[in-house]
Image (cartoon, rainbow, N blue to C red):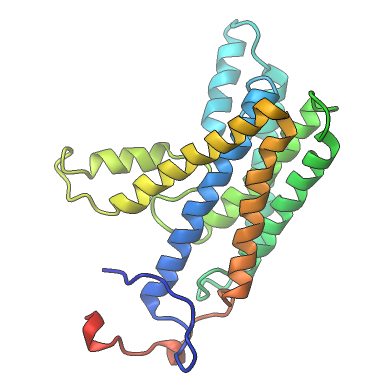
Length: 251
């Protein structure tokens, strides 16, 4: 069983191997909050467009192509293309990331790029009821979420893709006791779903005040994750010299 993650203490080596997984899980769950917040803004403030959950966009494009009225076919298509482009850019950014680190520096760089894009959208939209260029706003938000999705995927943590929870919910149910499983990793899965709901709630609530304000929770959380990774020295690789024997009480 993994031990709870804790920052470095004076006189201790930095991390045990289990701490690496724990640190990644905590930060990835937090990033799932961003998905809910950003999608709340795009769906409620940009006429039913998803900028993080591409499954929803693909479905909307199919509905519109099939003759359904009132659906933003062009905007959904642009968001889908922008997300794919963002994922490609994010993939390049983290291609040579040092995965020996709990949170590679290149992942933080990618997330900072996402923060920058969302800040630009917020700055051009704030104080207006409608985004001045809705297609550009949706594309920029989708590009940012594509970067995030690719960057976090590089970490290879099971059940925490951060930009969608369909696979997380499937695993939660299929591996539960009701599904005949052992409930493996149920805590991280359930917490991830809760994080997305909380993000959607916060973004959706602020959209009712002013659409652009719904971006603030996501921007704040992304920036906080980057700050935590830097302050707690999560960018440094864990080497054999960093591994210390667990105390008897923890065994």
